[in-house]
Length: 274
Ligand code: SF4
Image 1 (spheres, rainbow, N blue to C red):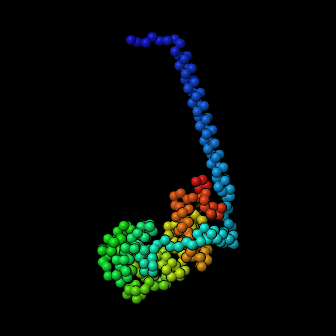
Image 2: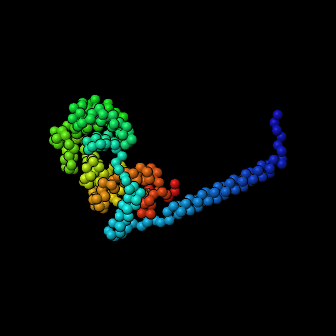
Image 3: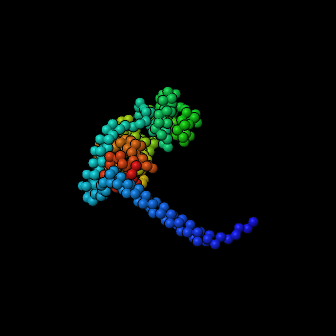
């Protein structure tokens, strides 16, 4: 049955609409207030975490002073930074470094003890077929290329260097699968020879964030670091930055509020809240 119109309904509907509109407006005001309160809290947290907005040093002397301060704080925070790859000699470190490309050190450290038991000498690695070796290192990824590099490196070291990993950058670079980064790791960590600075993904990112380089190419970044970091710091500096990158200045979410270099950092990636 059709409902008869109620003449009091129209004004009531209008009234209801007005009430709804007023309520809606009130909600929006409350929301705005809440979000502005949140902003204030955030701003106060920022200020609490890092009141300083460091300026870029203008003179060469100020730039060097800042670098020295960075080095001193890294020494303080990571006094015993070392290479995380397990090894007992230069050859094992070379193999572990080749395996660590695109792979975590933890994974490499799981694979290498068994690998070095199976192939105890450079000769053993030189004699094994790359396709067999590839199966032993499968879990480290890119195993076919890595197997070729390791077997090739063993053969070169055996034929050209009497089975000993060489001690100069030039000789290291003649070995298959070895570029400057790997050579720097082996020369620095196994022999204590400061031939350069290891530039891995952590060092690359942090050097850029800390404005120690304006380059993106690892070789150019290394040259920049070699100019500003004193040579007697090259080896430990690389290890410190790698630890710093893993623990604090992480790629996606740098932990700036707990960073010991926050007041020296003017990176656009700096995050003032946790
Ligand atoms: S303040 Fe942040 S971005 Fe800057 S070095 Fe520290 S962790 Fe990295």
